[in-house]
Image 1 (cartoon, helix red, strand yellow):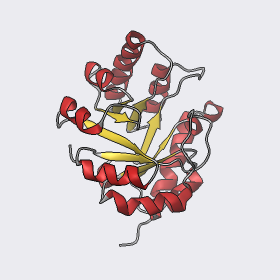
Image 2 (cartoon, helix red, strand yellow):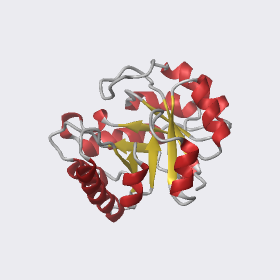
Image 3 (tube, one colour):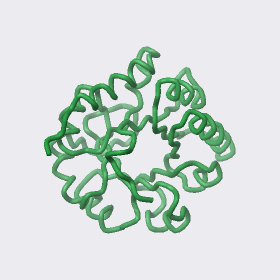
Length: 216
């Protein structure tokens, strides 16, 4: 489906394993904070439990007016009737995934280097990419080499206009530079839940994004 970054939630909010809040409660907190896009990121659950979580989060997100996408699994995304799926480099092939998803579901892919960026652009099946990591983060195991702002910016021309959300240790203070570099948004997780202040943390990202004006 076409994705217009000018009319799409700039802050993609990822749920996490290992928090005092369940994934469903994280989704409730995000919806209450005004989140427009929730990505369910479950790494340590059996398929049946994962699907049950996904179905609950999809209902919560949709009731709150948020998009809900699933990390890693086309099967879970389809079975839970999520809005789409985000696939890492070790997940299902993007072209095969698009064939299964059809044209009405979002499909995102991970980009860590120039080869990934070219492949994403040439696939013609992705709606967006997550690009990074911006900096070191302990949220993800087997972290790809850190790109930094300059590294991320250098990959954007290779995407041939494909919208990109920066990921990996992103802080509100990074958003002016990221938006100025023409990122479509940011994907955040652990920083959203710091000090159990989801509403304030989400607002900090939104405010920082909106405070940056783009040159024509």
